[in-house]
Image (cartoon, rainbow, N blue to C red; front, top):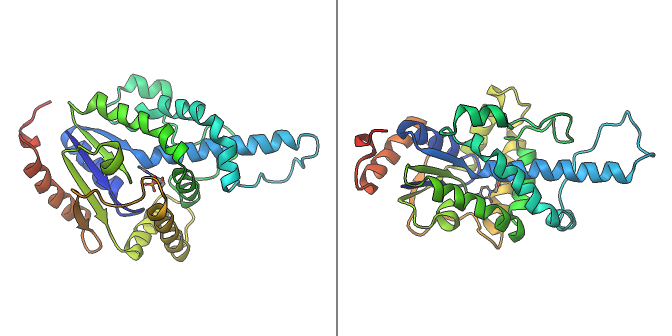
Length: 269
Ligand code: DC
């Protein structure tokens, strides 16, 4: 069985998907994290390339600038995609609460950039990495490179149960999912949640800047030519603007009960 939780940035997909996976002991894949991890690797690769080309002339005391991506930069990293995706695939087990402790211990959490990489100061969950991820995600070469990894994850685990979290999970990654949920909320509500989440995690944040970034990302994600942000035609829609997390979960649980041949509450692992 596969449950897809799709929707725009900040709608609460991750919270809901993780809660469902934990509730039923199912596997969980945060597909946005794959794009974010790729964004970080790409920023580090481009910063390294810039460093190498300015060797001998660089000023040691100057902070390394954050690289922003344009289409030329995406073209430049295209040949590197298979190698970068291989690294992400090696990290994939750590997304998965069902992964063994031994695997997690060997691979580390990888949620923080290791060592002194150029992107080390950027939070993996922050809007800067999100914006770079969104730019990368609009490129068909990037989507193709990450697609097989996501489909393999599902194929290997669907017997046990999988919750997929992300934009194209119900439309592209797993069109035959048991249940597809399209979770939305107003841009203001989503920005407010992100803002509060960042403050709780001690991440420097400004509400208005977060709102603008979320609105920009909505436009970019909804208007790209490949796998744009849009509900699957058979998705259940849920607007969580005025709902608590518990209320959202309660509604989705009733949908799961209805969609499953056997209620998951009757399954023992
Ligand atoms: O869900 P998120 O904010 O972590 O995702 C970051 C970006 O990655 C998002 O703006 C678009 C892209 N993305 C995607 O295109 N397809 C997915 N399945 C997940 C994320």
